[in-house]
Length: 174
Image (cartoon, rainbow, N blue to C red; front, side, top):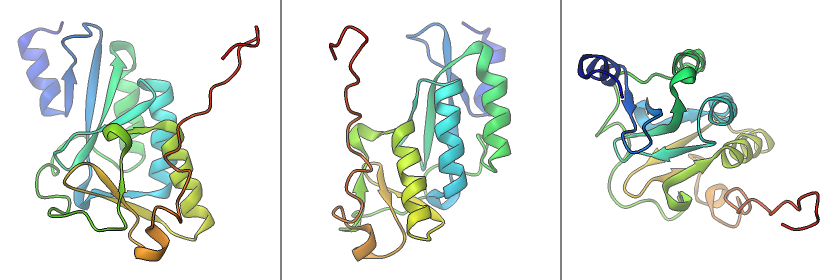
């Protein structure tokens, strides 16, 4: 574990030691207004795969966490997040996302997580529909396409949060 003074400095940067794991950190991504652009979704998909555990978690504070970042990948993850125009520093936190009942056309995040595959599918969906961004809303970690009830209905975006299919191994078992 990091020394107490080092851990405090890292927390000020939005990087938290994952104590139970003993070998990783989590970066808290600040999302003013809860907005993510298409290019940011695609970039985050790569970052989650290459620097983290392969997913983002809704943190309930107006943003997403990138968990399971090994110590050796923390600096690279910071650099890549900032290259996307995102930050781990304030502003961000409570009040930066919409609150109140989630709109009926909002999509609940499966188990509060966005897998890298979800991020890629969302980016592709935005491309296909000529849209540029999504928004996160509270409570419950809900992803909301800001393009109206018809386009954002679960039927219209079916498959974005579908579970990953099992891939058969070389021996033929899944």
